Length: 407
Ligand SMILES: [Zn+2]
Image (cartoon, rainbow, N blue to C red; front, side, top):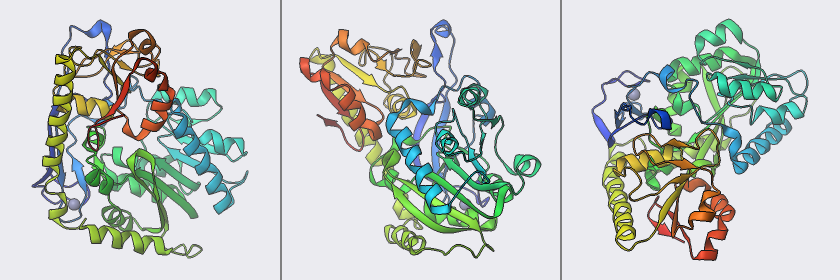
């Protein structure tokens, strides 16, 4: 395998999660007798440019199709985050009715709706037609396509005052072409922001469950700086965010745009990463051992529950839980009876690989489990508050990452 940025031969393995099916390929009850396709899930680090990455085994068109079941609008904390972003950016850069805000991977319009409320023109780019049609119901037009240099030069050339993308950069197989597209679509004084989970948090907090096939790259500021500079874009600010267990929001502009000052945050972040050792192989070694300890602890917990006659269910049928369950080899309903999820698109389906059924969260009130495992640990406060009534029958919550915790 070659590095998707610098074409270097990749030989250093960061983490090997063996095999699992694509994490969003929920199994319909009708398809229960059909097999699923498993793909290797191995993460490499490039010792030339420090991009952490998985191989593109499943074609991206097969992953982000009309069966894609991720709808952004289902998390209230994520909506609040989107609204704050729209407020902050509008105030900082003075967008108005003459501006154009383009979001890449605009999903169901969960974020652009807040710019639209301010009468700022918006345009989404979203490859999945079913999510784009939900955006249209909110009055948000989307180009149903994958973003890249071709789309940018044909339809978006020099149009955007702001191009943003949240949790998309890591999902792009050809990151060079994608960033080239940003360069093409941006107005001469335009601003680009991307938010993505910071690989340093992944390493620090054992977030191996954020590794899945749809997630091609695991990004450091150091690695990305090279990727953007190669396309003529310059970082001028970076913010650390608590979302997804610790994300970065990068701000980029055309290299020759002198209207914006490069803030100290850029040099500070580079120094912080250098101090951690992001540009050394040592930094990435030893991660697998930490992952395997979590696997052991989790399996041990489930076995103890089973032997003690305790009832265990899960919350959140999303990629994180799927990676964890598959890597830990949990199958069927013998350890975890079901998983709750608020999204109707996931209910009454089976989790890929582990084939645990997914039901409406109300089911928990009847089944009164002893333990509810919260798979999206980044939302554990929100979810444990919503389900605080499980305390009435002595139920407890469990998170597995960064280490097993019962509360
Ligand atoms: Zn590389």
